[in-house]
Image: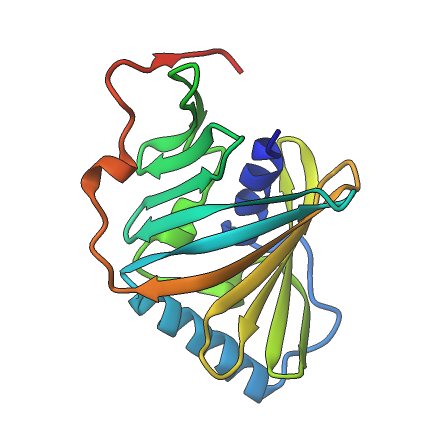
Length: 207
């Protein structure tokens, strides 16, 4: 069983660029500010991206899958078998598809604001950043936010050389942790339009 609610909450916290309700307990250095700005600029310029991900939960459970991203406003996560679920954002909201039952759940876009990350410009300097650490060739940017389910904390880890996202981890309101690592990532790929759509025969289900 995938942690779809946790994944969606993580997006909400990590990529919502609202007015900060929490604050970093120190001033960022000029080097950190420039690096974070460069990370935003670099990732904003990536129009399409495909790759694989590994998800590890608090109990050590592991799941893998494939993701597809196209700016603006499109992303899909396909979990590998035996899971039959898929998470899709197509600009109007988020949908959790069950390929076995041919059904889907809908999440309004305004409650899961991944659109700020999928848009044309990423500006992490204006997110709810509470911690920044830089070591061993990686920078970790920790964001905290209030969601409808409670406070969620997300740490985004970027390679300082390539400026690309390597991993993120999140702590749910319940205290459970999830970590997502990205690998075999390719940029500038053509992605079939069908990957960001809901089949016409799928039926909506209540959450």
